[in-house]
Image 1 (cartoon, helix red, strand yellow):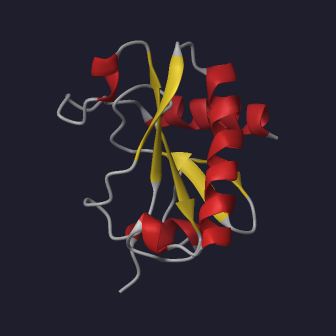
Image 2 (image 1 turned 135 degrees about the horizontal axis):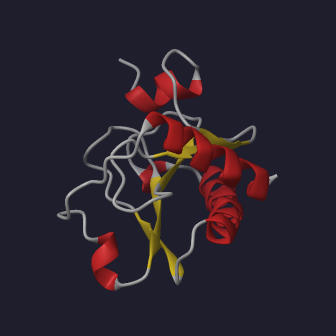
Length: 131
């Protein structure tokens, strides 16, 4: 059964896409820890990040770096944290989380509620910064 991420990749369900290439896609997390929290996902549906072959793993991380640089140019923060948890969705992904303190990347924190209009606006700003 395709993951929810695969459905976003295939445009079967909407997602606030901020960047895409032949190998990966990045979109805003719908349950963000901070404004701009982005998921970077390989288009190849693999459950566990470290099961990607070396080329796919390298391409994903280079793409994540490109997205993180654009994200940092749009969202006011000290750093872009990365996290790989991999338990919530059975499709490898990297979290890019704008942070100003260590506690900003705590997955136990309450998730933000951001309006659809603001998510669309944030995604457009990040997309422009990545291109």
